[in-house]
Length: 196
Image: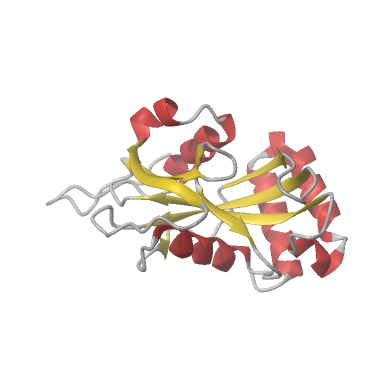
């Protein structure tokens, strides 16, 4: 996604793949009509943000951050600060928030979209984040560095995700990522089929 037109095309492909979410996607497309301003955090009442669902290559763990402002465990990501390439913004945020240098895109497509309300904080009024989510791979053996935006970071077993977060949108996004990503290849079996 190099520009707004590519972003809109990706959203429309997502809507075809997820027909029950067409009303949500329509809101994303409507926000795109606000032009480049919608990619900046000072565009109120809402703006685009980008998230990274960072998984290990075995698809058994997901990297979460305990968000300092929100006080909950969520995926990595944040404001795109004018970057119209939301995949790039999601990857940049993931690197900045985890300290992991080798975070690689797992697939080019949007994995999930979500609109969520952010409560007032400091001088910022309540507003909506139009969150576009992509899947990435990283090695859980890498050294994590907690950023100023977090209390903590943790590789969470996918099967224990509910113990860390009650956020349905996070659980939904992880389910979608597991469905579309290639199944891990067992040692000695290079012909393992894709999931789904």
